[in-house]
Structure formats: C-alpha cells, structure tokens
Image (cartoon, rainbow, N blue to C red; front, side, top):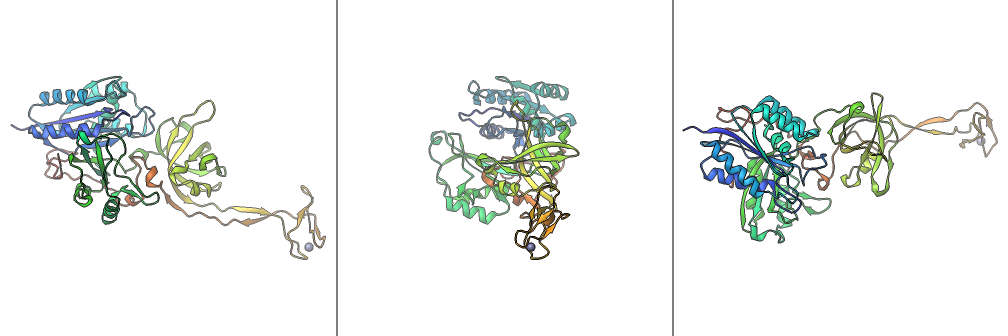
Amino acid sequence: MAGVPLHIAFDDTDSRLGRCTTHLAFKVARQLKESGARLLDYPLLIRLNPNVPWKTRGNGAVCIRVSVKDPDKVMDFVTDAVEQGSAIGSGANPGVAFFQGSEIPDALQQFSSAAMCDVLSRKMAQKVAESCGIRYHTFGNGQGLVGSVGAMGCLLKADHTFELIAYRKQENCGSLRQVDEGRVIDFSKKTFPYTFNNYDQNHRRVLIAPHGPDPVFIGVRGESPEIVSSCLPMLEIVEELEGWTVFRSNQGTNMHLLNELDLRCIKAYTAGFVRCRVKSAPYAMQGGHVLFTVEQQGSEMPAAVYEPTGLANVAASLEPGDLIEIGVGVRKGTTRHPKILNIEYLNVLEIASCYNLLNPVCKECGKRMKSEGKNKGYQCDRCKHREPNAQKIQVPKQRNLKTGLYVPTPKAHRHLTKPMQRYGLEKSDWKIAGGGFSGYYPIEPPICGL
Ligand SMILES: [Zn+2]
C-alpha cells in the first residue's frame, strides 16, 4: 500500500527552563521512521521573525514531511508527543498542525512568507489553517499555532542551509559539555566556507555548543548535510550521545530581510531592508551604540547600531548624504522615544562628498585669517591684511569609509543572520530527486542519525 504524504509541524514546545522543540522533532522523527514512515525531506527547522516580542528562545518551529500508511494514527501519536513533551505550564504554548496532500496550498505558503518578517496573530493562523484543511491542536494560549502553520508553509525552495544537531542523554543534561576547542577551530578551518558560526575568532569562543541545561550537545551549521555531519568524526566527541539529526533550515539566509520597507508606513516588530540616505550625522551614545537619522523619499526615522554587533565604528563614519541599504528590525515606539530601526546589516552603496568649512587664507602671508563677525569679512592676525568680502571656503573631507557590505560579528548573529562567507553561496533551488512530489525532497534523506 502506497503511503499518504503527511506534513507535521509544531512550535513553542520549549520554555526558558529547558526542553527544546528540535529535540522533540528528533524524537518524533525517529519514532516515525521506526514505525515504517518514509521521510520526504529532512526535518525542517524554520526560524520566524526574530523581532516578535513573545517568542521563546530562538523562535524556531519544525516541520516533518513524511509518507505514512495510517495518517490518523500518526496524528494521534504526534499530538500526544507534543502534549507530553512540552513545557506546558512553565511558559510553553504549543501548537501542532497536520496537512495531508502532495501540494502545499498557496495561502499557506503566503502565510509562511509573512511569518518571517511580520507579526501574525493566532486568529490569522486559525483562519488560514481552516481554509487550507489543516487539522490542529493547541495547548496553553496556543500561540505556537502561528509558528506551526508558518513552518508548514515554508518549502525552502530557494536558499537554505543545514544544521546537524546532536542530543545528549538525559542523565548528562546539566553537566559541562566536553568539546575540544582546538578541534572546533580545526574543523572550522577545514570546512570553510561551507560551515559557519562554529567559532568566533575575535572573542575566542566556541559557538557550536550551548551552555544551558537543554538536551542539545552541539549544533553545526553549513551548506550540505554531508559537510555538517562530518563534524561528528572530526570533533572526536567523548560523551555518549542520544543521537543526532540533520535539519534543513532557513538559518543564515536573511530570509526575514527580503522585503523592502517603506518608512511612511512602517510597523513595529517587522523586519526587512530599507534603502535610504543618512540624514543626520551619527552620534555615539553611552555603551558605544551609534544613533543617526535616515531619510527615504521625504520620510525620516532614527536608526541604531548596537555596540555588540561590531558595526558601531562603521556607523560612526557615516555622513549626511551617504546612500545605504540597511537590514532592520523595527523597535516599537513608546511615549519616550519614536520607533527606531535596529540595524542588522549595513551596506554602504555610495559615499557622499563632504566638506569642511574653513576660514580663507591670507593672500599676503599665508596664515588662516580670523572672522570679524557675521558678514564682516576676515582679517589676518599676523599682517593685519583685511578682506571684507571673503567667504568661508569648502575643503574636501577625507572619508574614512569604504563602500561595501558590513555584517555583525558572529557572536552577535541571530539565527537568520546571513554570515559574510555565505554571500555568493546562496542556493536558488532545492533539487527534486526522482520526481513525484513538487516542492520537497521525495526520497529518504541520505544523512540521518535518527
Ligand atoms: Zn597675513
């Protein structure tokens, strides 16, 4: 008997106390595989708009696309697993969604695109779920439905990355993760530029291992399933692990910054990019943050670069008139301050000619003259030569800035931030090997540690 394509998505199963949505996905996928289901794609790890204020740690949702013989049984099993495996009552508000069929409806794909950069309500998620024939369950306040539906509609047909996540045995959770720093550096060098965010050279910090009590041992991100899973032998991990899986993901793709924003009608918490000119000279605030005003077709807005991004020096070198493109998240306005564009990347497109206004030089002796007062001309201190009609002169300013792209230091990266080394490596499709289903991988993912 041929199987039925079933799309399973869930979100918001974790809380700040531990538990982890990807770990639940790992366990569910393993169980499904053991009971004879066929995975149609790598499990997806989808990061949604990082500016939504009520997100959990990373705002990541998962989707598992499988071919199964008895979808009703599978849906019951997954619903139970989400209910049992979530931190309901300590901050998690899970949602789980199911869709049967080989085509993902357009409305679902559109909802997903919007979930990357906009703020969507539970009501909107319910509406699209009902119109598409999605079966769903929610627990707690049900906020997780938004991410579930958003992840399910995300086909990752264009750019995508992979992450191998290895999980610890329960008895080891909470103890120190033994990861050899030298081997991480070595792995990072050998696989460059096809893995990213393994190690932060500037701060000498291992980035693949988290520090909390959660079950993730390491997460390694890169361009292919083969390259990310090559970390396992290369890192020579001593700890006995529960298992691992390779997720296909929108991490490191800037997927949240793909749409252009219009400053005239910009919404709080949204994300996107803005092409604009620098309007006011930047100034440094306490803590090393830099603030300036930008202008786009007559509309102005403050923009901020925060110190931890490592971009503050570049921002401080901007001058009024410079043409820039910035990736931003919109910070909500309050009674004390207006909406602010929080800058995620900075692309300097055009450097304006800037001038310093200086007093004229004395024709008699060459010394710079002194002003006699407004519109009263200039006089030389040394030889007393006067020029009643002289004006200030413009001297071109030396610009200490180069055009080009500036991205944050790895330590300050969000999950969706595209690292510098990925520029030029973007994928434009997701190969369908063998045909049969449109939009996703129809064969068993070859790299799977379930
Ligand atoms: Zn003089």
